[in-house]
Length: 268
Image (cartoon, rainbow, N blue to C red; front, side, top):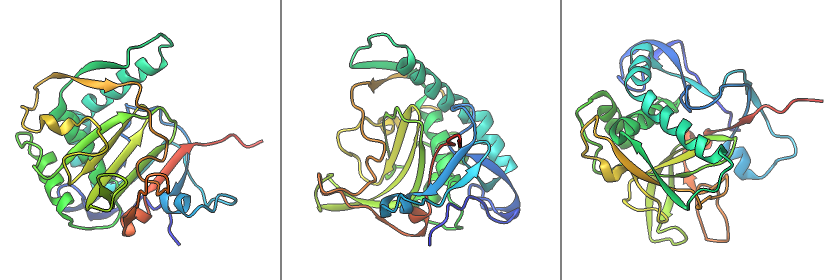
């Protein structure tokens, strides 16, 4: 049985600095980029298993959060990097809610290095198991060093995600190119309205644009990045296995226990 677990002991190893400290709660997705409210949570494994008659739901009154990083690291993310990723989410959300006819593609000014450090910081936080994977090691060093460029073996893709659900999945595998069995790759995923992010060990995935194109940018370098408003994938893409394009999803405990959250439904 897999449960949507989101905390460890109050004093434990911080996922970011790796020191044993009192742990704080980190919101994933980060607060400030979404409306925090009551959510119902279940594991991605339960959704993929297909038993939807009696889902085992957990509730949180203020979004999905993990007690996995210390207050110092939490404050670092909130002070230095979250404003960038939150502004990006808020701005893209305004486009989607505007109600006016928009072009197929527009551009938005952003500081990609700060955005990527925010993203990877919260992805590192979104795992209760104390592990030391290659991704964890590279991402920790990158987030904690403001002058460090994005490591060469981390590639970050993004696309529009117009759904109320949020999903964070750690350490899972899929084959690339999609629909083939050519090469396995390791992925990390964070999806929430209005943008989804996919980290991979491979430099391309399904024709998606990449934030990692700007991996060597200075911390405060700003550029207009493209946003494809017409490419809208399904709410369970790319992780859900399916026969249509032969996609295969595989992973260990962290992937199986990943959390899928949706706004709590009012009970009659």
